[in-house]
Length: 310
Image (tube, rainbow, N blue to C red; front, side, top):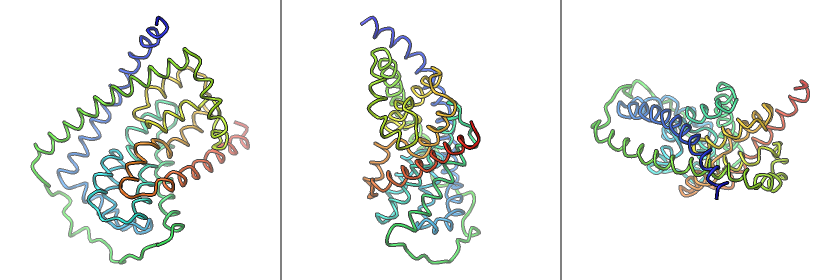
């Protein structure tokens, strides 16, 4: 019991510090997106990029779902997807792209805290998402044909109030409060669990258990716990545990970059993946295509390190 009390005493302050940092970023980004949605600017942005989505085999209105997910989170993308009439193929492609690049502001900030340059993360995840969309559209059967007529942005007002502000604001505030409560509970419990694993010697067992899979991905075994955290709860909720692990100094800068390359594109493979599956997407394709991409990327990175003697 004394050992567990020591674990909690060490974990809770660190967790609360991270919770406050994540919450501030999330609140600011989500409020900005609320304003963009309220003023209709978000709709205009989605319309501007919609012609590009034909190369992904997606209709123009899917662009709003992707843009929402890119800047906010998977939940906002799912909310838009639920209003669209997309095929299984289209949900699978859109889901794969969004899972590779979502909540970019918050998650890039988390990866910056762990030692990976923001520019590298943004370019990697954005181009990775685009590449996945193009590849899947070419590989998956049933490639659709689209009307080549371009969207005329002159017909879409840049500024167009969507509805009353206060009802939208109250919905946003309620959602933010729920998110804060969930974030507090999950991040605190995860941080306590992480330190308990070290205290009771469970971490070594976990590393050995997942060592074969991580070897396939090109990741060092000391990153096993962080890989599990990222895959189960994602980067935002797992941020406290991830940063705490980095500060222990047991993982090299090279291993951190390899891990962040992998989990940047492939993380949160339980809840978020199942959300898109519930919308009709094929979960195994959304998972395997991203795993294939990150495996190639990490092994390419390792080859680069070898050739440059890093």
